[in-house]
Every structure is written in C-alpha cells, then in structure tokens.
Image (tube, rainbow, N blue to C red; front, side, top):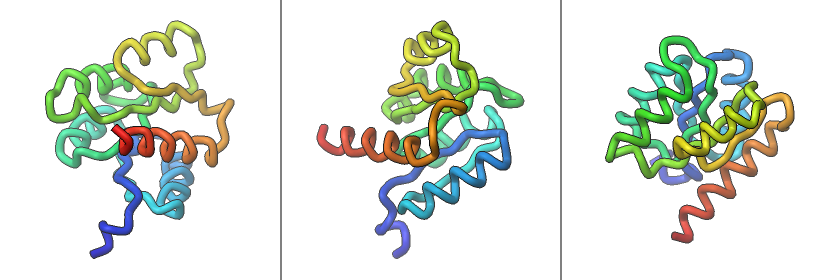
Length: 132
C-alpha cells in the first residue's frame, strides 16, 4: 500500500496556486502525502474529513480566513489536536500572537522563510508529536 510509506498527511491550505503547487510538490518529494485546500471553507471541511497529521495554514484566503479556520479546527473535538503551522504574509506581532493564542504551534512569514525551512518545521513538529 502506498500510504504506508508516507511520512505523514499534510493539509496545505493556501489560495496562491503557484505557492500551493511548489510547496505541495516539495512536501510530496520529501515523502509526505499532501491534501490541498484553496480556500478557508475547503480547509475547514478537509481538516474534519481527512484528519491530517498537520495543517499548513494561510491566513488570507477566500470564503473563510485562516483565523476562522483555526478557531473552527480548535473548537472541533475531532480536529483540535492537529498541529497547525501558520504560513502567512501577515507579519505583524498582533497577527502572530492571535494565531498562537488560537492554537497555532508555529508561525512562519512567507517572505522570510525558504521552502526547505517549512519542510524542516513540519518534520520537527511531527517528530515532536511522535515522541509524546
């Protein structure tokens, strides 16, 4: 079975198609199974349906913001334990604090971070979870 070889299932909630494709391909090459959502509504629905091992969440998305998705995921008993790493263009301290207060385990500003760093953060968070 193909799924057995996966390092984990990542929900990539990103409305920028170029970034979604590039990061999705990178994560797939690194051994992850990637589930994509192009808007907030889809992200919240797929989180509940797919129960990914980790969510990479953009904050500025159509239909529902990442903050709304994060709130919804953390209020839902079946998804509240899924670690969420925010990957956003919003770099204000207030946005970072709000995301972490809502339950994000990490916050990465897109313009400040390389794709390999995103992958390293994903691997580190899943490794940390595995030790618990």
